[in-house]
Amino acid sequence: MSGIILTLNAGSSSIKFAVFEAGDAPSAPLIRGSIAGIGSTPVFAARGTGGTALDGRPFAALDASSSHDAAISLLLPWLSEQTGDDPLVAIGHRVVHGGRELTGPMRITPPVLNEIERLIPLAPLHQPHNVAAIRAVARWQPDVPQIACFDTSFHATQDRLAQLFALPRALSDEGIIRYGFHGLSYDYIASALPSHLAPGKDRVIVAHLGNGASMCAMRGGKSRATSMGFTALDGLMMGRRCGTLDPGVVLYLMQEKGMSAGEVATLLYKQSGLLGVSQLTNDMAVLEASADARAREAIELFCYRAASSLAGLVPAIGGLDAIVFTAGIGENSALVRDLICARLDWLGVLLSPSENTAGAARISAPASRVDVLVIPTNEEAVVADACRAILNGANCTSID
Ligand code: AMP
Image 1 (tube, rainbow, N blue to C red):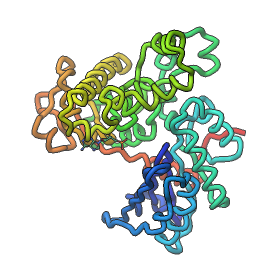
Image 2 (cartoon, rainbow, N blue to C red):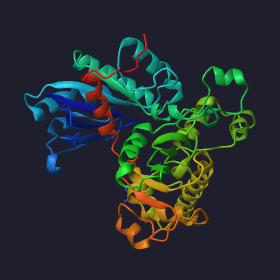
Image 3 (cartoon, protein in one colour):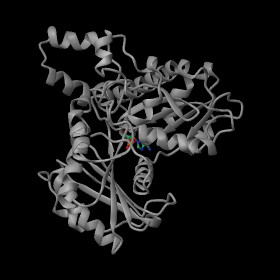
Image 4 (spheres, rainbow, N blue to C red):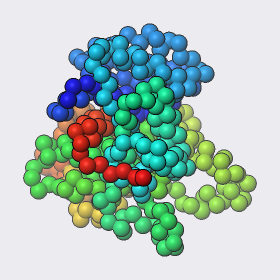
């Protein structure tokens, strides 16, 4: 098949995009870029094949008042200028929450979009922007098929026990269960694992450590348990999100301190995590460079909680053969990898300090019982592959 596929990952203040050839063989992106700072100071950056920086002059028209819609209305004509006569044959979206109904990649029809919208309260940081991007594309390119790929889908293979909260049954039956997120990233890592691990080493915990952070325990490349739950608030401490919290704290804030539900949501989603503990920033690289004791405490807490979470996931896979670090912090921070692994020596985890500092793909020492790997994630490639499959007529799930 000729033509090109565009992938979009719309977050609260950014749109990340990539362009791939639609041809059958998976390929490196022709263009990869982002529009960051939407709603404040928009910054456009994009690179073509070979890493050449691409001219983004039209995006200078964006300012603090520009919406996601305005950014997309500039992006689509800019892309057709870059790609010439190659027609856009599909646009694939990363969508954070698919709930119980949307369990695999699917064409976005009106009922599918309604269901994605219905799930907004379960992923308030991400889902509204996914919906906005889908609607904006429909306005500018109504005839190009749009395909949604869900972060929750990868976890559909988990046992019921890994998904249940200890809540009354009726609540579980209505869908208040652990869904898990970052599934597109885990899907990519699962596909890369066979080229890094000896056959039979299939009990793996992947640590996706970025601004959002979670872990997934996999066996045979399938999700068996994950640290995130009903929403993307649970589990690890994150850039601005608190991660696992005694639910009694929420009750206390509301009943004793008189905070409204909205105020609590803002506290837990936007003012906690690395930012809340350090009172400086949500950015790990900046914290690492800071001499402030609060920065160090935030990093230590992040790593302590990550190690605790990792250890708590081992029972789901009956042992541990490998740990994989990925995403912005996992791929780039030797300090974080070191602090986490140092707390896991009793599990047989031993890092090679030189390989870790060098950012090698394999950072465990030869004597380590557990392989420790760093694998850059590639969610866009997973979305592009799903688009190719659907364009080629693969059976895909849908809803009426
Ligand atoms: P992501 O959400 O995957 O883009 O990851 C963003 C996070 O990765 C931010 O906290 C960054 O500070 C962090 N990060 C990126 N590069 C580095 C680095 N060299 N050292 C430490 N943290 C980094």
